[in-house]
Image (cartoon, rainbow, N blue to C red; front, top):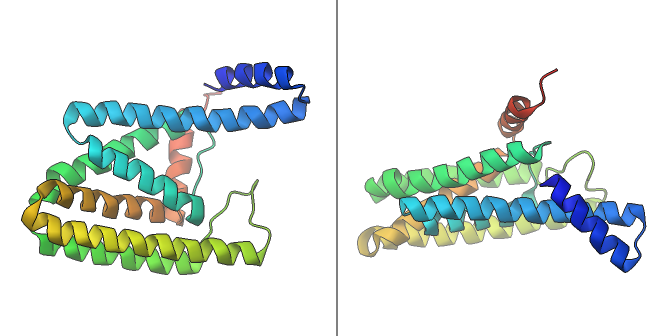
Length: 211
């Protein structure tokens, strides 16, 4: 993937007369796009096979959207990120679709309350969590990202609450979608904590080349 992105960047950069530094920036962006697309395609294939594609789409989009504001632990390797992202997108979707959707709405309402309480507290204390190579340099930007995080978290709360309460009675698929949104919020908020950072470092270690 990285090799393909660099070849594409070289081709694009030379045709546009870009410097080597500018070509490196193009390559970095292309790696992100290819990685993003691969995760979505693989997750979608698994979701279609096992009947929870809609949930995978909700998890994929909601985590990505919230992550842009809250930040969180980043994998240092392309393939480790690819593997655990596909695993968790599909895992969360499967749990919401096959397990939580079979439980009483009161139980899932309690889960929802706990997840979003955890989310609001974590966002208030930590957001945004930025990587060392891309720090948030101004307090104004930090406040803007934190405010945006609260807004998105609140929108997710309303949407998941409606899906859980209304979906349980009238539409089981809507119920499952609401639960997938709750679990995807939990995943992303956890990535802002020391637990999430430790998990990502553990996965990176599994994919690190052996000396």
